[in-house]
Length: 204
Image (cartoon, rainbow, N blue to C red):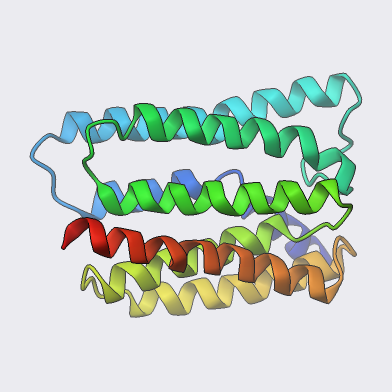
């Protein structure tokens, strides 16, 4: 069981979540220009997963981080700062055509949550980035269900179950205390629900 929980913790690493959400979005929705959708997905994956992984390897070589889970608040400051900068580049380039607004506001929520996590790291408080990502997915799913009218019940149930497994995994690995898991989940959830209001205003 322990090996399964450890493996799960790597599978749901928060660095992969934005790309997975985008993959779902572009596969679910119908687009007049599928080639443009593929191009955007490529850029999203590059900026939110590939480049951050490369930066992690560089920081690992420089001994500025010890593991991909960024175990201490101090280790998180530089990676989160760089990730926030990459998200800003993403928002200003990939979504400069003002299309796919729901995904645009999703990434605004990811940016907001990343900034909060970074500020908390500066003051030496470590929230769970894994649970922050799960909370973000749940918030985006609720936004799609309520505002866009997309049937998301099974996705929401799946995310809740995945969140429970992730929390169990992080507790088993002694990576976080309970309040760090809860606060991380709330940061991700609230960030997305806050952006939902702006998304609603943009489409009405």
